[in-house]
Image 1: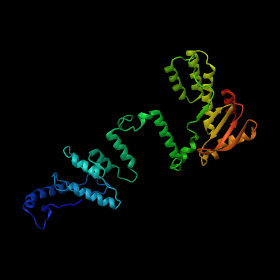
Image 2: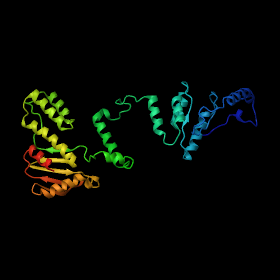
Image 3: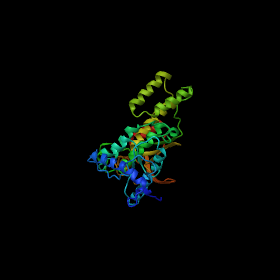
Image 4: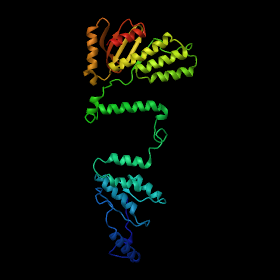
Length: 336
């Protein structure tokens, strides 16, 4: 960017226009001196002021952008602060393209108020207060929420936060991690050839069946499951064999998840448990895994443990034979 200094800026060769502006300059200088007491005397923000006269075409914008480029080259973080004028949208867009622009009085006040080291979160919260949270589930801020659903998005977000707490920010959340029982498996994958469903003859309305499946998927404890079962019996009568197996499969998932089982396969009379895939996981130094090992040692006739090479790497498997029903599978896994 080339900067061209106006001729009336040259004090060595004053022009007619320079003399014309002289009374105005003296007046503004006196007013500035009278009102020179800083509004925020304790502000630690270093500021470069580039003109304060509302006269267009004097080169303030281009000079400001050039100063910003020099500061960037010297690894000095800077932003633009400008009074808001509704008729200067082009200038505001130009400044925004070259850096962060603050043209709102409330935002500028927030910057001056929170100038200490580590005050970024305060500035962010103040900015959120000024502009509002917006439509959280709307297209402007939600990204792919509309495609994957809010519950799935929330689940992915919570998993990412937990992972950060356990790894990158482990030291920061060390006290919190001690107080909370660690969960090594977030969602267990169940693969079976048993019939786990509500039969059509038991609940003939497909919409109602889907609704009940959704209700069942969010139940987290025994009391909730018992209440759900009683509601089914009250509305549709005694539970058929497939429905009982479905409810028991939920109990199996709870126990297996607590044991650190990521995948459970129940097919052809066998139950195969796949443990945490990450071989470096702290799960393998935990009390839960020690509990599994102790069970395998004492119940070697019921199960066998071995390592197996899979497309996803080496996996540790626990295999049970002669598992002919969901009830048998639940009985075995509750023994661990």
